[in-house]
Image (cartoon, rainbow, N blue to C red; front, side):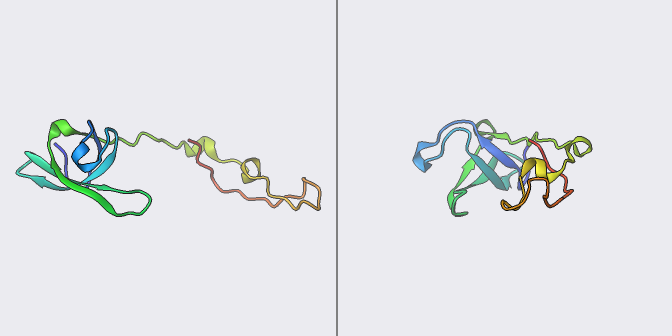
Length: 104
């Protein structure tokens, strides 16, 4: 069963609302212990709601964020990612940063 504020993925197109399979939405209300779900879909460019509709279990699946950052191996000199240097000076005279960099 899903719960309020779960992020879901639409399992099929819903042409009447212009929604496409794979589109992400958020559950904003669970009806009667899971008999239905009020789901909000938002335009990522504007942040505005594009659809607010009632869906059923067969219409959605849970979005599972599987991105894992291994901080023990992701620390590296930021200069390796962004070449920060003064173009008028030698490339060895770069400003040093030691921020952790997430690699995906």
